[in-house]
Amino acid sequence: MAAMHKSALERAIENPQPVAGIQSRSPVDGLDRRSVGFIDVLSQSVSAVAPSAAATTMPLLVATVAGGATVWALGAAMLLALLVATTVNQFTRRIAATGSLYTFVAHGLGTTASFVTGTALLIGYGFVAMFALGGAGYYLAILAARLWPALTGSLSVPVFLILAMAAACLVLLARGIRVSTRATVLVECVSVVIILALVVALLVVQGPALDWSVLDMSGVRPSDFAVGAALALTAFVGFESSATLGVEARRPYATIPRAVTWTVIGSGVLYLLAALSQLVGFASVGGSITASASPVNDLAAAYGIDALGLLLDVSIAASFLACAIASITALVRVLFSMGREGLLPSAFGQSHRRHRTPFVAIVVTVPVLTAGLIGTILVTGSVWRAMEIFIVGAAGGYIAAYVLACVAAPVFLWRIGELTPWPLVRAGVAAVLLSAVLVVYMAVESGSARFAGVWVFLAVMLLGTVFAVIRRVRRPWLRDTVGIYDVPVSADVLGTALAEDRAAP
Image (tube, rainbow, N blue to C red; front, side):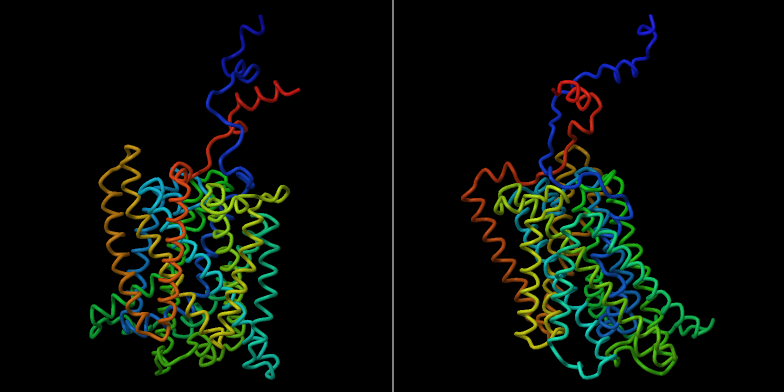
């Protein structure tokens, strides 16, 4: 009689029925599934952007070409980045994957476009990782030279520091996603606090009467504004990297879109405040930001807050290191996806049994990136020169991948019957503006001292795309395997999980 009074839910729990079509393993099985929360996911995108480092360097780069339109150019870049972020989120709300834009484009434009996107994305993540490792070594070497002047100008110091940090990155990444994301969020939080402290100190010193003439755009040509906005956009690249945690994130369809959007908003606000404080600071002392090699340090010295300038070097180095960890985190997960699909050797799709990380991709990638960075430093004879080459190539890779993702989004939505006017308009505007930014950026950089970065980007992009296309010709079955993503498994479904447990011997 008691059994007759049980509710349907109680009966279902007590005697679950098997659920058809649910497999016991996901196509991306092997990673630490559903193990990280929103803070970890957010830290991945924030650290990949490295807002602390960008906030201290980007205002100078933009002001060099945009002049009085510096803040406005940064604002325009923020709006464009938001357009791209909301377009990318059309995928992140529907697909949980490790391949990020590479996987997303496959579901919109097919395998060939996906290969181009994947190549661009690997360039973006890989070149930024080398740029960031170099930046961390560069600023730590400056700090070491302050303490021991005899070390000034020595290339061996930053090279040694880069080797030590690369080893630390390898250990952190191999130990597990929670270890690496929590290390980066701690480092980036400290860096942002230091930057904000300096910004607030500069604004407080100015008092209530700020010099708003620094926002005057009179005399600024539209072409200069466009170039400034193109340069400013590079400060936002990497915001989508949390999409590579689609398998490992809890509630990925909610946490990843929020992380992508709030990374752009938070970074943009920091950049605007940093740019305004620096421009106002130089105006009040009768100087110009464009005449300074290190604006924030020079302002700290001018206003008698040298201690913050010293902390700044530490924070920038820390931000660069966090960026390197986050960029490699994203890079190895794209490689993991390519290995699982067969585009790359299957070893790249293997994971560590205990730590559940893409171990093979990590132990291959970190040494290759480190060797590439140190080799470039030795060839150019300068850490900074090597960094310039890598950041230009990285920006080109990221923006090219964003263009293809924006083109793919409406096609993807149309294929699944969910296309509406607003996402179509948003994606179209973003794709057109991004294409213009890419052309302008490459044209500007090809005529600058950083022209080598343009040619390195184009050469690697061509080689990577040709390799992928040849691979597809030799392995025609790739058209059916590219684009893998996480799916519900038996452990996620009450009926299937309990039925399997009951059937187990």
